[in-house]
Length: 124
Length: 284
Image (cartoon, rainbow over all chains, first blue to last red):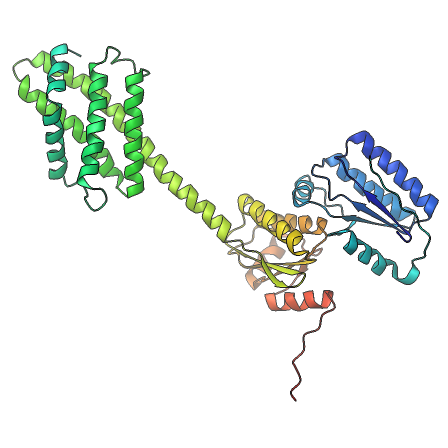
């Protein structure tokens, strides 16, 4: 998607899968030289503190590699759970859906966005 | 209980019922405007029959027996019915206690000569009817509590409407104190509305919140964080001077949240954030 990576999480993440995602994603960011990462969690109905931390980690790591992270499509129940757990994902941008997330990334990165990124889907 | 007493009561149940109804009428606790005479006669008959059954049964002393259970069921039904119809607790309690009175009167007349028997029966009757009146009271209060619970739920539901003020902007006027329960309903309603309308800005108007303490502030911050996780910005509006004072005195940090004094200025800010402009139409 341009120079953005789009990750769609289709299943409830258990710990191993989440760790794999973290590693794979960071590798992809460096390989594709992506400027933005969109994580679509609209299909995730269950989160725990570990998952919250992984999201935060991905955002921080991407920041170091000069890519902005946007978490999109969070379910209301998931949002409430994360807040109750005290995880407000301070370093992560959020958007209502993928479209809004793209808009946000475009706005943040300005006209600096180049073509030539690759699509990376997590369909496990 | 002595079998002659049981038999006597069983034989005279109709006259006992009539006597009881007369006693009730004399005490002015029939309250015809709340409950028709036939209905109360029918209820009383049912109750009396159940009570007589317990007295006649072998396991009179055993409060766990089937007969005891059925009489408890009937008395609960009667009390809940009366609670819903708006009888006062005194009237409901007197209703049950007047049965004791009536039975005592009837027995007194019949067995006036045998003091020992009279005493024994009266004691046992007392025991049974006292436990019944306790049940009455319990269920009466439970009936009332159910009504209160239902009303509380209703207030919770209707007092947190989420209003769509503009495309992409929802407003949530919060009225009343924000406790944990309310916050839960508020957050859920707000988040669902954000998803349904695809809004990116939510205005929380707290002009209807009487007081803000650290707990309320924490609930507000939680609401804002949850909305942010969904991808919506929150603006808190309607902060009255005294509330601003309390917040500062309590040392609550709201600097990470956009706050405005009035709903109007919050809406103005929302328009700015959405790059919208409101202008007076030019006259031709």
